[in-house]
Image 1: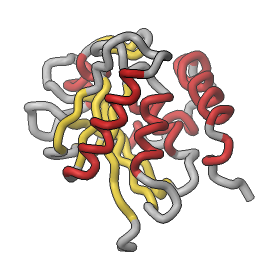
Image 2 (image 1 turned 180 degrees about the horizontal axis):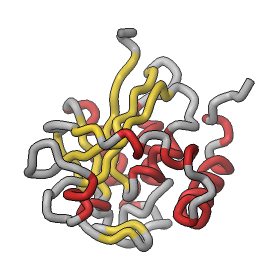
Image 3 (image 1 turned 120 degrees about the vertical axis):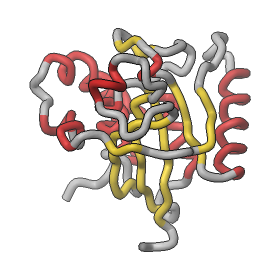
Image 4 (image 1 turned 45 degrees about the horizontal axis):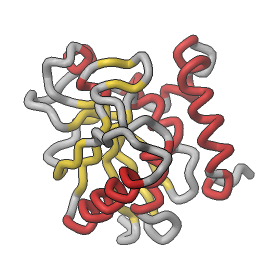
Length: 182
């Protein structure tokens, strides 16, 4: 593996939404949906959806740190979901939709904590940031049908009404960071 390839673990509500955004970023190699932060081993989607496992829908991002850095990924995370709502994103409600970042090392932790501090102080957000910041314990990969969900299911109502507006807003704001289509 290339030593500039690194991983980041973010939970910003439904993993179909966050995956759809990060797949479009230049420097992102892959995005895998899964589960983190819970108290059961090898949880299934059905179990996580009950809200009883303690897991949150999380994405594992593999990225090339020579093209995009961790801070930029964190910035995108905080600007593409609402970190000021506890245990929900829009109509997706429950602990499985909570905002969380699972860091790998102290440097990542400090980047996230500094970002949250600055974000919290910004005039734009007067509400409390509820993003959970925890050391990564274990990431469980989600079932295969969740992978590349948005791109494979764009015509479903959830994708059309929930994900497409988020992706469109993201693409307008972060034009310079999008992958070049050849």
